[in-house]
View (tube, rainbow, N blue to C red):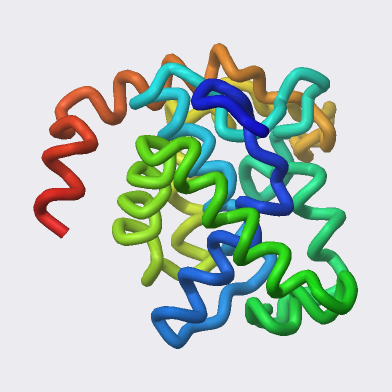
Length: 189
């Protein structure tokens, strides 16, 4: 059982995003999913003062095209730049996962409704944004990626530079400070 302050395995966040996309009759690319997991994590830190996913061992890193959640990248690299559906994701990782994910997500929503309100709001805000625009949004001056990115002597981005939660927290605390609280945001939708 998870508690309201524990993190969620990135697999379940991916399943959540793909399920929401399915409900909205959309597919998502691995790039979109990776950026959305990162943004959901940032919003959780900024609005709830707690992480969504684990980032203790430098899991979130500054890569050429912005922040990357390394585990998410590895889970989804099989698809390349092709869209992923909830069904294809579940089928790829094994029979019975569709029902397992649906049950697990329902359990997590019951255990931590505040976090799922936040995820629903993030989905609503970002669902129509393509991968290129998500790169631009997470790549801007002052973002955690911009603060932590390192370059070699040729100016090329050095991969696998961690983006710590403290940097993400400070950025999203400031970026989201003028938003209403989650109850007000979800009451509008």
